[in-house]
Length: 492
Image (cartoon, rainbow, N blue to C red; front, side):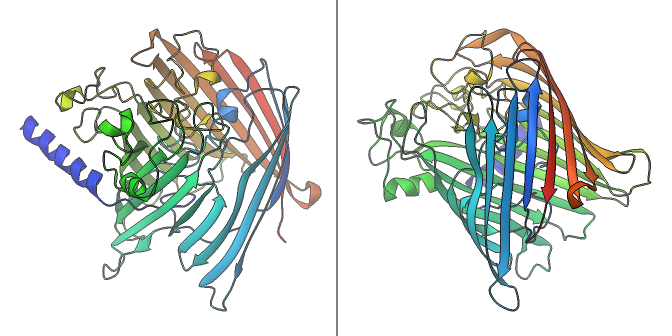
């Protein structure tokens, strides 16, 4: 019976894995997205008991909060979406966000968003940098989706897809989908590679109407780094490129027209992503979401060799407010596990059980790994080696020396005295390094955050923001920090 269930589960993953890849783009997977604009100006300051900014002050902030303290920051954003026709089905718009950070070591001007958009009904074509949350998970107080969190600056790309879920014709709203298809490019100032390109696509299906008490979700995302230059495992320093290899990138087909060592035995480029499943339950007082992200970087998931690895989540939103002085409006519990990786053997000439050592976010050609401007694109709990005071074995010149982790995460959101909004993120991780450069005994780490914000009558209405954070453990230096900011939203 157990063998039969394993075979059935394997068959399900094979079907999902080989389904055509298209994807979605929106601020939160489970909410329908409508046109909105955000215009603001904000001034902030960050300080800490050490020179490094605590983890939860700078992680999952789209790469705009420096890793060093003290720092001052000035930010502003302008967005505008306007109608082209009288019915409003066709709209055009643009957005730009600027961040200027000041500290004693380095002053930086960042451009987290700069895009133009053309929208028809609930479809969108955009070009440039635009903030996105990808993956079936909570987007506010979670630890972040595995493959594409909010940890790095958005990557410039051209993307076409849906805004929110779109009903499949003739299903009366019982089946809907949300997807996009995009291509972009990485920075040329990378430590190892240059001229590196991004291919990305994703698809999510929802079973159940918007008003249904129970809704089921399924889908996956697919990211590829390809077509650049690298001195590692390539022919004459060039990774496979051109239209025929682009087709192989899209389809995930192995082998290329000009193979290096990696390309002759695996897929063209560095592929990674997750296969996601979820269930949402609506009651009178709560909205409950269960989700699971299963990870892939090579064929291990196809054979269920690394099925132990993944992000498991539970989110509960409370719909009713009772006017109390202290209320919790949302709660997230997550467990991220990446220590298995299909085992410690990676021999593609052997049976499926030996195709392990997935080495998440590292790659033999793309040695600077799944990163953008020095930050991990995926979960921040797989950090670049440079993020830590690294007292452990360094994994050669690869991007991360710590991709075997187990993380318990609790996120809370609520109100205080009915006027102050607050969030808390509490994370405890066990860090084991990599298979080839293990950390023993494991480096245990706690990172916590408590943040508040409140509306003021100052300046005709402004928002005062503040937070406290701490890192305690062996992976990062023990550090206590804070942030304080004032933000003014406006329209024009």
